[in-house]
Image 1 (cartoon, rainbow, N blue to C red):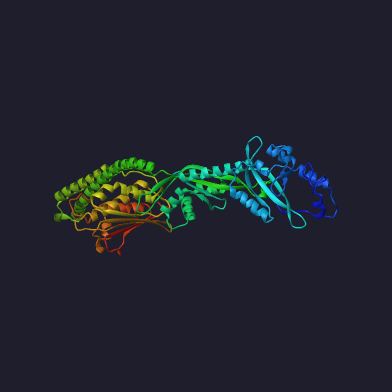
Image 2 (image 1 turned 90 degrees about the vertical axis):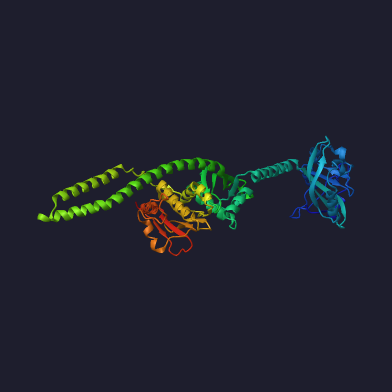
Length: 532
């Protein structure tokens, strides 16, 4: 509030009477130069909704308006001549009064809050402005005080602040990661749990990068939330953290509609749309489920191994019989081409019977061979299959003192394939690596598994520190019934051929890296969608 200055005429008219003002109040001049009746100014002050008082230089009350009596409860006759301190609760800090009188001493107005007390002893918070009234000689002759009851506004502001603090305290203490994005997908708020998740996931990257990774994992649900404001609940996804085991999360997403706070939105409200994401770590639950799943997988793979073993045994037997049968077929053909005395019909008959019996035996073995397990193709998470294969091999890895360097791609698109066959393929490659590093001559035993996304597909590298495979054998090892392992250890020589068959079934490739010198590096590439 500006300081109040009185013209000579106004100063002369400011003589105090019973009400504390001149009989006709304080005159002023209309902007066009026309004098308004002084009664207009008196009535304006008298009927103002703001409590107004005029005091002398010692703060003794000379005049109060009607609003003053309504706010304080004191009648006019009860306060005239009394000091303004009659309203004080004597709990307002001394520094507030010092600031007030310091400003008035400089002939400047002061605005602040004081704790006052009504006549009925009820307290209220006075939003007060005090200004000096200055005459033509630049002397302060009165003080003009105006105040209103700011208790309700203070209570409302404090309640909002308290609610804000309580909500922040709750959000900061909950274990769930909470994130709020504005309509431009920028981060407005992120609680400590989300920041910890971001630090574990991408320590040196901005939070926006982590949000993009999570958005990619959530897929269409996240995009529908941003674009169409369609909420979702219990959307699960997993994140791989490199050397440590992966973690699983359940996400809830919804929108928050907030009305515009600016003045121009008072009559025509505009709405801003914010996005709320709440992410819960469900790793412990999923790991317990994973243990049950792994036990079921062990039983399933044991059955598959049994079937595969029987198929390989029968195939091996057929393979072993095929040579002699072929020789019999050759001998029969040679004898059949002979004529006259050179032809021994008795021997030919015996060989034909042996050939027929041999072919019959092989046909019987083919008929007795267990059928391959049928499986349809579906989206497969390669990281998940490798993680399961590692879990299935944990006991062997620990028993042989093998450390695992697991380097999964953070974002790895799904591959359309046969899940069981791919799992068996990776398990076979891991078993081969463990067998290679189990030899006594191998001192440093480390298994490295790397996955990454490439143009059109996924690449997986399985690297061991075993003795490796000689360059001359790096193609031959994919032939059936050939093995570099020591005989007598149950090896059938069908592991890598099986791997090759499964990769080919998925339109992929598998090869042993010839440039890798320490140990063996097997590279498997699988397209996102196979052609079979």
